[in-house]
Image (cartoon, rainbow, N blue to C red; front, side):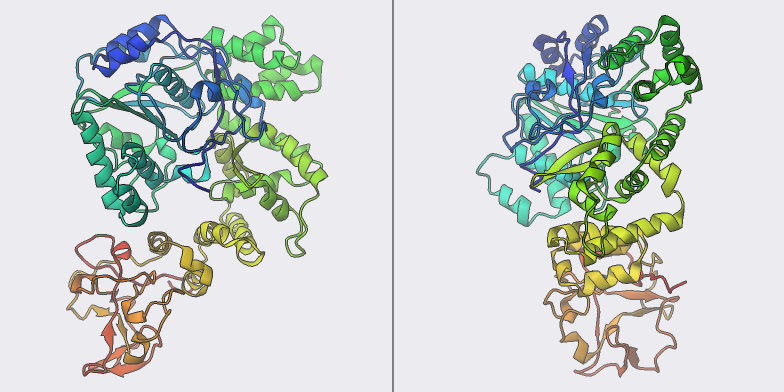
Length: 640
């Protein structure tokens, strides 16, 4: 999948109210944040109805956000769920202040709108009027409270106002969770079309080079007074497997008034504290709770689509529940009432609903499995949870069928499973003409883990089942490279992981940085404080093994030029790049004096002389950038 040219949305939203004008966005872009917020206090801008979360695909030129948000652009016309329709029906929410824009590099829609807000946060931001050096706004809140809807509305209004907007919704497609994907996309967006750095960005630049480049380009924009608004939703879902830390690439400060950044985050996420440590400290907007009228609108609209309604007493019971403060809880409760089959007991059913989101989801999962005639619902949810970024529909069918005989689950049975889980899954992309499925909200993944995957042995068996499927059942090389090492890492099948990375020809396509990340989790972390002491030993190769190939990687690189961990090319054979073993992992029994043990053939050879053993080295990815060396022993299942 081309992560610069193909995108898909998390969820799709239709927004009805248009109360924030271009004038107010322009005033915020000029440094007056209070104008926009005072306006939104009087005009609730996120009042709208969310349609079904149809997943979108767009090319690198993007698509019009107003079409995207109004449901006029869909991927092959397919709709993944109607549950989203009511997640933010008739909301009243504070808008986040965008800052500049006209064009977009790569379009992404947002999570379905889900929440209504009060006026408390507006006053907080208004109080810092005039601090124009504060270039970042953080939108925070609990899961399911509508943060992504606020971000989607901000994108929509900013683009309508003509601002230069770059936006990214984490989780919108399998590649969107990687920090380097955002950074490289932003660099491509900011660089001129024929700039020579575009090619270097693809082929030559390291993670540090890319981070420096994006800092430089943003400062250039600010110095030239060119407007730029960066909007990133759900930064807490970013993964950090490629040495670009989740938020390190964001400059802590940008001079001038023309560049602004808006990010959203779950309020309990660790990255929120990182953002708060920025100097100057970002503005912070807490997404507040739904008001009573908004709750009623959500319930009436959702049930009204199915020609159902609650009487005033039932409506009051539902909307006054403690859980109704969360829009996701309210929507899921409406779905539960919709499928409840005993009309006379609806009031009792409302009273019995758990008042917390986790409890409600656990009850829903129980119901789904109890009513499942196929016996595949639970396994489908568990496989999706253990997947890296969701699964293509065809792979799910094969995994649910007979893998050994290559017989997929019959389409009729799969149709029943898909219909049962329709409100809880979303399509995050296409593989050919096949939909790629994942949970429509992280709260569902959390509930699945708590219900079925919290047991370590069961979780390991699921990861190994996925690993067996990718390794032995005819998956294409791209899929194997992307999925197999991850599944083996999660199953903690270290020896099998090392065998794949070092001997399987398909592992040639795994990047050096990825290999270092996969191996690094199982590597001994003891530091070598004094490399010359007897409490450690150098990793050595005999004269014969150093001239051979592929001991550490299937790539055709001589062993003496390979990293002894990941097999990558060692560009600089310096003393600080030498590989060492700590006192706990030195060769046992130790070799005789003036002799060394070859790390490849494990034979003892005399040291010194022109044909003596040579030291092994590690690459920059496995060095961790520290001043002191770290033991290179990889701890397999047989090691203590």
